[in-house]
Amino acid sequence: MTETVQAARRQQHITIVSETFPPEINGVANTLRHLCQGLTQRGHRVTVIRPRQRQERKGLVAEAGQALFSREHLVTGLPLPGYADLRFGLARSGTLRKLWQQDRPDAIYVATQGPLGIAAVSAAHSLGLAVSSGFHTNFHSYSNYYGIGVLERLLCAYGRWFHNRTSITLVPTRKMAQTTAAMGIRPTGLWSRGVDCTRFAPHKRDQELRAQWGLKANELAVIYVGRLAPEKNLRMAVACFERLRNLHPRARFILVGDGPMRRQLAEQHPDYIFCGTRRGEDLARHYASGDLFLFPSKTDTFGNVVLEAMASGLAVVAFNDGAASEHLRNEENGMKADLQEDEDFVDGALRLADQPTLLNRIRAQARLDALELDWNSQIEQFEQLVFTQTARTRYHAIDNQSISLL
Image (cartoon, rainbow, N blue to C red; front, side):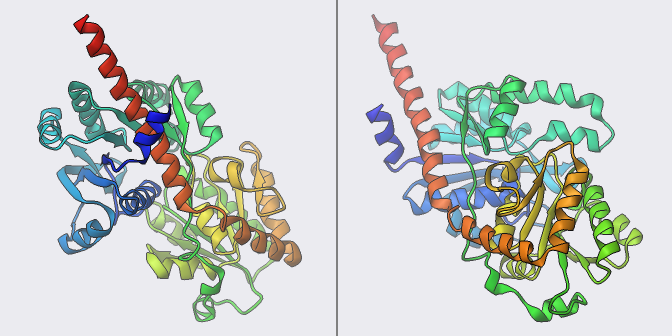
């Protein structure tokens, strides 16, 4: 065991394979940005294999690459059905095999389950390379929101087949470990997420921005940040806000993000404020200028936005799943409801709107708790899980070779 821990601490060459990557905006891309940056800062050499992005600006990607990784290899990208702004990658396993024969990585981490991921796992197996995977997205759960629920069992079977071809599958929460175990995926390792509390902070609250939203000092900004898509359960957020506004007519609903539901929501609710996609300091300013954060999703494996909202000093209302199941304590640093209790979700938001003292106490505690959730500890955990698994695979391969020579 000592040798495997030492292996995790040595400088390593790791290849990250993903069909989404910065500057794309989603939870997986955000997580991989922090992962690549953290591994690079800790002295590891990071290679990224990903699809060429739609309307990619070479300058922007090159600038990001200087900070996040040592080298990248781009493959053909095609639009993902239902997610036209995202791509899936196409690559021959033979092409990846040649790439890795020329520059052999110590470990391979496959973050997505698409065609590129399949090719990467196959190529890694053919070369005897250790390959780990991440369970970042509940695609099988999405099917119910797109009218193809009959495919859920098939998608579960596919996920089980894909992940069980890798040495270990990393999951972000204990609850997700239970979910993947029920799917027949094993072994798994717990690798959570952190938050940048320098980027996301309460002092970035902007009164001018709030005035643009039509709010006075003590009026309530209810905010949602994320993709405007069916699987995010936005109907629940809308129903919740409408109930809240019946009691607090001056409250405003702020939606930050974009997606296929934006046009329909804007037509049905022209008084809602649609801010579109925001990045960097501008995103942090939008977070901090809100008061109450609605996260109605029941499909996210984690939900990085929950931690970003906490760091920004917002009172989060969420279902007891993903990040909320790990980091929210009901009525202490947020409000959470059981997955089947939609009414409790609404009640949590109404209580916060009705009780300013409770709202402010939760907001303050959320910020304090977020300060403990740094990315450094999560990068170290990733090293232990992936590089230790790599060392074990290498030692087993040596043992097998020794046996064959006897």
